[in-house]
Image 1 (cartoon, rainbow, N blue to C red):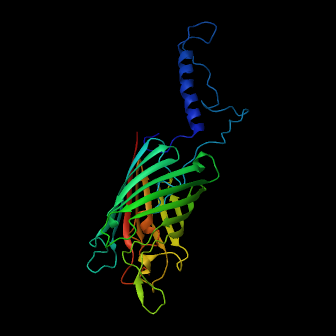
Image 2: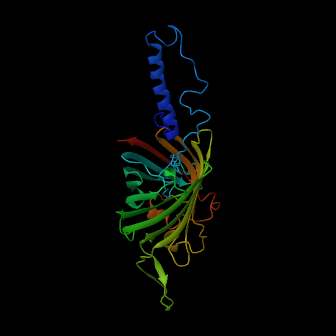
Image 3: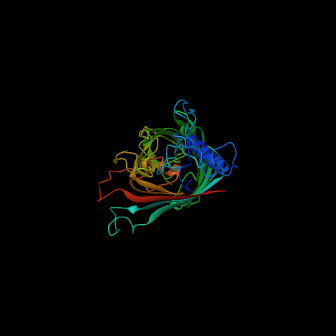
Length: 339
Protein backbone atom coordinates (compact mmCIF):
# COMPACT_ATOMS: atom_id res chain seq x y z
CA UNK A 1 0.00 0.00 0.00
CA UNK A 2 0.20 1.74 -2.36
CA UNK A 3 0.41 -1.08 -4.90
CA UNK A 4 4.04 -1.98 -5.47
CA UNK A 5 5.23 0.16 -2.56
CA UNK A 6 6.55 -0.79 0.86
CA UNK A 7 4.02 -2.43 3.25
CA UNK A 8 2.74 -0.36 6.14
CA UNK A 9 4.28 -1.01 9.53
CA UNK A 10 2.15 -2.73 12.19
CA UNK A 11 1.87 0.48 14.19
CA UNK A 12 0.59 2.41 11.17
CA UNK A 13 -1.94 -0.32 10.39
CA UNK A 14 -3.28 -0.17 13.95
CA UNK A 15 -3.59 3.63 13.77
CA UNK A 16 -5.48 3.33 10.47
CA UNK A 17 -7.79 0.68 11.96
CA UNK A 18 -8.58 2.86 14.98
CA UNK A 19 -9.28 5.83 12.73
CA UNK A 20 -11.76 3.85 10.60
CA UNK A 21 -13.47 2.49 13.73
CA UNK A 22 -13.75 6.01 15.16
CA UNK A 23 -15.55 7.19 12.02
CA UNK A 24 -18.28 4.63 12.69
CA UNK A 25 -18.68 5.72 16.32
CA UNK A 26 -18.95 9.35 15.24
CA UNK A 27 -21.73 8.53 12.77
CA UNK A 28 -23.63 6.64 15.46
CA UNK A 29 -23.39 9.57 17.86
CA UNK A 30 -24.64 12.02 15.21
CA UNK A 31 -27.65 9.84 14.41
CA UNK A 32 -28.61 9.16 18.07
CA UNK A 33 -32.23 10.21 19.10
CA UNK A 34 -32.76 13.30 21.22
CA UNK A 35 -32.89 12.34 24.90
CA UNK A 36 -30.73 12.94 27.87
CA UNK A 37 -27.81 13.66 25.57
CA UNK A 38 -26.93 16.96 23.98
CA UNK A 39 -29.63 18.91 22.09
CA UNK A 40 -30.46 17.86 18.54
CA UNK A 41 -28.14 19.36 15.97
CA UNK A 42 -25.28 19.66 18.41
CA UNK A 43 -22.17 17.59 17.80
CA UNK A 44 -20.32 15.76 20.52
CA UNK A 45 -17.35 17.60 21.95
CA UNK A 46 -14.16 16.93 20.04
CA UNK A 47 -11.23 15.64 22.04
CA UNK A 48 -7.89 17.36 21.76
CA UNK A 49 -6.32 13.96 21.19
CA UNK A 50 -6.14 13.05 17.47
CA UNK A 51 -8.27 10.09 16.45
CA UNK A 52 -6.32 6.85 16.68
CA UNK A 53 -3.60 8.30 18.94
CA UNK A 54 -2.97 7.20 22.49
CA UNK A 55 -3.69 9.87 25.18
CA UNK A 56 -0.57 11.56 26.51
CA UNK A 57 -0.84 9.86 29.92
CA UNK A 58 -0.94 6.41 28.29
CA UNK A 59 2.30 5.52 26.44
CA UNK A 60 1.86 3.98 23.01
CA UNK A 61 2.42 0.23 22.87
CA UNK A 62 5.88 -0.75 21.69
CA UNK A 63 6.27 -3.31 18.93
CA UNK A 64 9.78 -4.75 19.08
CA UNK A 65 9.17 -6.99 16.05
CA UNK A 66 8.01 -4.32 13.63
CA UNK A 67 9.13 -5.42 10.14
CA UNK A 68 11.62 -3.33 8.22
CA UNK A 69 12.95 -3.24 4.67
CA UNK A 70 15.19 -6.05 3.36
CA UNK A 71 18.90 -5.21 3.03
CA UNK A 72 18.80 -5.19 -0.80
CA UNK A 73 16.05 -4.47 -3.35
CA UNK A 74 17.24 -7.26 -5.67
CA UNK A 75 17.69 -10.99 -5.03
CA UNK A 76 21.04 -10.60 -6.83
CA UNK A 77 23.30 -7.60 -6.38
CA UNK A 78 24.94 -7.53 -9.82
CA UNK A 79 26.32 -11.06 -9.98
CA UNK A 80 26.47 -12.10 -6.33
CA UNK A 81 23.31 -13.40 -4.63
CA UNK A 82 21.92 -11.29 -1.78
CA UNK A 83 20.08 -12.19 1.41
CA UNK A 84 16.88 -10.62 0.04
CA UNK A 85 14.25 -13.10 -1.14
CA UNK A 86 11.09 -12.82 -3.24
CA UNK A 87 8.56 -13.72 -0.56
CA UNK A 88 5.95 -16.46 -0.52
CA UNK A 89 4.19 -17.11 -3.84
CA UNK A 90 6.04 -14.37 -5.70
CA UNK A 91 7.26 -14.90 -9.26
CA UNK A 92 10.13 -12.98 -10.92
CA UNK A 93 11.33 -12.69 -14.51
CA UNK A 94 14.88 -11.39 -14.90
CA UNK A 95 17.13 -10.28 -17.78
CA UNK A 96 20.88 -9.83 -17.24
CA UNK A 97 22.81 -8.27 -20.14
CA UNK A 98 26.52 -7.54 -20.73
CA UNK A 99 27.70 -5.70 -23.85
CA UNK A 100 31.06 -6.29 -25.56
CA UNK A 101 34.40 -4.90 -24.42
CA UNK A 102 34.45 -1.11 -24.32
CA UNK A 103 37.90 -0.94 -25.97
CA UNK A 104 36.96 -3.07 -28.99
CA UNK A 105 37.93 -1.31 -32.23
CA UNK A 106 34.84 0.01 -34.07
CA UNK A 107 32.74 -1.51 -31.29
CA UNK A 108 30.86 1.66 -30.31
CA UNK A 109 32.02 1.34 -26.69
CA UNK A 110 31.04 -2.32 -26.72
CA UNK A 111 27.48 -1.83 -27.98
CA UNK A 112 28.38 -3.37 -31.38
CA UNK A 113 30.77 -6.00 -30.01
CA UNK A 114 28.36 -8.79 -29.14
CA UNK A 115 26.78 -9.50 -25.79
CA UNK A 116 26.27 -12.07 -23.05
CA UNK A 117 22.64 -12.44 -21.97
CA UNK A 118 20.89 -14.46 -19.29
CA UNK A 119 17.13 -14.98 -18.96
CA UNK A 120 15.89 -16.21 -15.61
CA UNK A 121 12.74 -17.23 -13.79
CA UNK A 122 12.47 -17.38 -10.00
CA UNK A 123 9.72 -18.30 -7.55
CA UNK A 124 9.35 -17.75 -3.83
CA UNK A 125 8.13 -21.03 -2.37
CA UNK A 126 8.09 -19.72 1.20
CA UNK A 127 9.21 -16.52 2.90
CA UNK A 128 12.98 -16.87 2.82
CA UNK A 129 13.12 -19.73 0.28
CA UNK A 130 13.46 -19.15 -3.49
CA UNK A 131 14.25 -21.31 -6.52
CA UNK A 132 15.71 -19.96 -9.77
CA UNK A 133 16.24 -21.32 -13.29
CA UNK A 134 18.19 -19.31 -15.84
CA UNK A 135 19.87 -19.75 -19.20
CA UNK A 136 22.88 -17.89 -20.66
CA UNK A 137 24.27 -17.80 -24.18
CA UNK A 138 27.77 -17.96 -22.66
CA UNK A 139 28.80 -21.59 -23.26
CA UNK A 140 25.07 -22.26 -23.70
CA UNK A 141 24.79 -22.64 -19.94
CA UNK A 142 21.85 -23.51 -17.68
CA UNK A 143 21.78 -22.88 -13.93
CA UNK A 144 19.27 -24.31 -11.45
CA UNK A 145 19.65 -22.82 -7.98
CA UNK A 146 17.94 -22.38 -4.65
CA UNK A 147 18.38 -19.76 -1.93
CA UNK A 148 17.40 -20.16 1.72
CA UNK A 149 17.67 -17.30 4.23
CA UNK A 150 16.48 -18.47 7.69
CA UNK A 151 17.73 -15.37 9.56
CA UNK A 152 16.46 -12.06 8.18
CA UNK A 153 16.98 -8.54 9.42
CA UNK A 154 13.56 -7.47 8.11
CA UNK A 155 12.03 -9.85 10.68
CA UNK A 156 13.69 -7.99 13.54
CA UNK A 157 17.01 -9.86 13.64
CA UNK A 158 20.28 -7.91 13.95
CA UNK A 159 21.48 -9.21 10.55
CA UNK A 160 20.58 -11.57 7.71
CA UNK A 161 22.21 -14.91 6.99
CA UNK A 162 21.55 -17.53 4.34
CA UNK A 163 22.95 -19.71 1.58
CA UNK A 164 22.73 -20.24 -2.16
CA UNK A 165 23.46 -23.51 -3.99
CA UNK A 166 23.21 -24.31 -7.69
CA UNK A 167 24.09 -26.85 -10.36
CA UNK A 168 25.12 -25.81 -13.89
CA UNK A 169 25.28 -27.53 -17.25
CA UNK A 170 27.03 -26.25 -20.39
CA UNK A 171 25.91 -27.73 -23.69
CA UNK A 172 28.51 -25.95 -25.81
CA UNK A 173 30.80 -28.03 -28.06
CA UNK A 174 33.36 -30.17 -26.15
CA UNK A 175 36.09 -28.38 -28.12
CA UNK A 176 35.05 -25.16 -26.38
CA UNK A 177 34.11 -26.35 -22.89
CA UNK A 178 35.64 -28.79 -20.47
CA UNK A 179 33.75 -29.96 -17.36
CA UNK A 180 30.19 -29.49 -18.68
CA UNK A 181 28.71 -30.18 -15.22
CA UNK A 182 29.56 -27.88 -12.32
CA UNK A 183 28.18 -26.74 -8.97
CA UNK A 184 28.34 -23.85 -6.50
CA UNK A 185 27.88 -23.20 -2.78
CA UNK A 186 27.72 -19.70 -1.28
CA UNK A 187 27.07 -18.29 2.19
CA UNK A 188 25.83 -14.70 2.60
CA UNK A 189 25.94 -12.46 5.68
CA UNK A 190 24.43 -8.96 5.41
CA UNK A 191 23.21 -5.97 7.37
CA UNK A 192 21.34 -2.76 6.59
CA UNK A 193 22.85 0.18 8.50
CA UNK A 194 20.88 3.35 9.33
CA UNK A 195 18.24 2.38 6.71
CA UNK A 196 20.65 3.82 4.11
CA UNK A 197 23.65 1.50 3.70
CA UNK A 198 23.50 -2.20 2.81
CA UNK A 199 26.60 -4.37 3.21
CA UNK A 200 27.17 -8.06 2.57
CA UNK A 201 29.96 -10.62 2.79
CA UNK A 202 29.87 -13.71 0.54
CA UNK A 203 32.01 -16.83 0.89
CA UNK A 204 31.71 -19.38 -1.90
CA UNK A 205 33.20 -22.48 -3.45
CA UNK A 206 32.58 -23.44 -7.08
CA UNK A 207 33.31 -26.94 -8.39
CA UNK A 208 35.18 -27.67 -11.64
CA UNK A 209 35.61 -24.06 -12.71
CA UNK A 210 38.22 -24.68 -15.41
CA UNK A 211 36.12 -24.28 -18.56
CA UNK A 212 39.09 -24.15 -20.90
CA UNK A 213 38.83 -27.14 -23.22
CA UNK A 214 42.56 -27.92 -23.41
CA UNK A 215 44.53 -26.56 -20.43
CA UNK A 216 48.23 -27.40 -20.36
CA UNK A 217 50.78 -27.77 -17.58
CA UNK A 218 54.54 -28.32 -17.51
CA UNK A 219 55.42 -31.06 -15.04
CA UNK A 220 59.13 -30.18 -15.23
CA UNK A 221 60.19 -33.49 -16.76
CA UNK A 222 61.78 -31.92 -19.80
CA UNK A 223 58.91 -32.87 -22.09
CA UNK A 224 57.32 -29.44 -22.04
CA UNK A 225 53.67 -28.58 -21.51
CA UNK A 226 51.11 -31.36 -21.81
CA UNK A 227 47.31 -31.27 -21.96
CA UNK A 228 45.49 -32.03 -18.73
CA UNK A 229 41.88 -32.36 -17.67
CA UNK A 230 41.69 -29.70 -14.97
CA UNK A 231 38.89 -30.29 -12.45
CA UNK A 232 40.08 -27.83 -9.83
CA UNK A 233 37.51 -25.68 -8.07
CA UNK A 234 37.60 -22.04 -7.00
CA UNK A 235 37.31 -20.65 -3.50
CA UNK A 236 36.18 -17.03 -3.50
CA UNK A 237 35.26 -14.20 -1.19
CA UNK A 238 32.99 -11.36 -2.26
CA UNK A 239 31.56 -8.15 -0.92
CA UNK A 240 28.47 -6.22 -1.99
CA UNK A 241 27.25 -2.81 -0.92
CA UNK A 242 24.53 -0.30 -1.77
CA UNK A 243 23.98 3.24 -0.54
CA UNK A 244 20.31 4.26 -0.78
CA UNK A 245 19.58 7.85 -1.75
CA UNK A 246 16.41 9.91 -2.09
CA UNK A 247 13.50 10.41 0.29
CA UNK A 248 11.93 7.02 -0.52
CA UNK A 249 15.32 5.26 -0.85
CA UNK A 250 14.49 3.81 -4.22
CA UNK A 251 17.70 4.96 -5.89
CA UNK A 252 20.93 3.14 -5.09
CA UNK A 253 24.66 3.33 -5.74
CA UNK A 254 25.75 -0.30 -6.14
CA UNK A 255 29.10 -2.06 -6.04
CA UNK A 256 30.39 -5.60 -5.70
CA UNK A 257 33.75 -7.33 -5.75
CA UNK A 258 34.61 -11.03 -5.98
CA UNK A 259 38.16 -12.36 -5.51
CA UNK A 260 39.29 -15.97 -6.14
CA UNK A 261 41.81 -16.98 -3.45
CA UNK A 262 44.61 -17.88 -3.52
CA UNK A 263 45.50 -17.33 -7.16
CA UNK A 264 48.48 -19.70 -7.08
CA UNK A 265 46.33 -22.67 -6.08
CA UNK A 266 42.86 -22.12 -7.50
CA UNK A 267 41.92 -21.57 -11.11
CA UNK A 268 41.19 -18.11 -12.46
CA UNK A 269 41.17 -16.18 -15.71
CA UNK A 270 40.42 -18.96 -18.20
CA UNK A 271 42.74 -21.65 -16.86
CA UNK A 272 45.47 -19.06 -16.22
CA UNK A 273 45.53 -18.33 -19.95
CA UNK A 274 47.13 -14.99 -19.18
CA UNK A 275 49.83 -15.90 -16.62
CA UNK A 276 51.33 -12.42 -16.83
CA UNK A 277 48.00 -10.74 -16.10
CA UNK A 278 46.96 -9.42 -12.73
CA UNK A 279 44.55 -11.37 -10.58
CA UNK A 280 42.39 -8.42 -9.59
CA UNK A 281 39.15 -10.37 -9.33
CA UNK A 282 35.83 -9.26 -10.77
CA UNK A 283 34.35 -5.88 -9.92
CA UNK A 284 31.19 -3.96 -10.79
CA UNK A 285 30.08 -0.39 -10.06
CA UNK A 286 26.82 1.30 -11.02
CA UNK A 287 23.39 2.51 -9.96
CA UNK A 288 19.88 1.13 -9.53
CA UNK A 289 16.27 2.19 -9.13
CA UNK A 290 13.23 0.36 -7.85
CA UNK A 291 9.85 1.53 -9.10
CA UNK A 292 6.75 -0.44 -8.20
CA UNK A 293 7.48 -4.10 -8.93
CA UNK A 294 10.34 -3.32 -11.35
CA UNK A 295 14.03 -3.19 -10.46
CA UNK A 296 16.64 -1.82 -12.89
CA UNK A 297 20.44 -1.60 -12.65
CA UNK A 298 23.09 -0.19 -15.00
CA UNK A 299 26.82 -0.54 -14.33
CA UNK A 300 30.41 -0.99 -15.48
CA UNK A 301 32.13 -4.33 -14.86
CA UNK A 302 35.27 -6.22 -15.82
CA UNK A 303 33.49 -9.54 -16.38
CA UNK A 304 30.96 -10.45 -19.07
CA UNK A 305 30.00 -13.63 -17.25
CA UNK A 306 26.68 -13.83 -15.37
CA UNK A 307 26.13 -17.36 -14.08
CA UNK A 308 27.84 -18.32 -10.84
CA UNK A 309 30.38 -20.89 -12.03
CA UNK A 310 31.48 -18.60 -14.86
CA UNK A 311 32.08 -15.39 -12.90
CA UNK A 312 33.53 -17.16 -9.82
CA UNK A 313 37.04 -17.59 -11.32
CA UNK A 314 37.37 -13.83 -11.73
CA UNK A 315 36.00 -13.11 -15.17
CA UNK A 316 38.13 -11.17 -17.62
CA UNK A 317 40.36 -10.03 -14.76
CA UNK A 318 42.90 -7.82 -16.50
CA UNK A 319 44.01 -4.23 -16.11
CA UNK A 320 40.77 -2.35 -16.97
CA UNK A 321 42.60 0.52 -18.64
CA UNK A 322 44.74 -1.45 -21.07
CA UNK A 323 43.80 -1.77 -24.75
CA UNK A 324 41.56 1.34 -24.54
CA UNK A 325 39.32 -0.23 -21.90
CA UNK A 326 39.10 -3.78 -20.54
CA UNK A 327 35.62 -3.44 -19.07
CA UNK A 328 32.00 -3.73 -20.14
CA UNK A 329 28.69 -1.93 -19.89
CA UNK A 330 25.85 -3.99 -18.46
CA UNK A 331 22.34 -3.86 -17.06
CA UNK A 332 19.95 -6.06 -15.06
CA UNK A 333 16.15 -5.81 -15.23
CA UNK A 334 13.59 -7.73 -13.16
CA UNK A 335 9.81 -7.74 -12.71
CA UNK A 336 7.81 -9.40 -9.90
CA UNK A 337 4.27 -10.76 -9.72
CA UNK A 338 2.36 -11.99 -6.69
CA UNK A 339 0.47 -15.19 -7.37
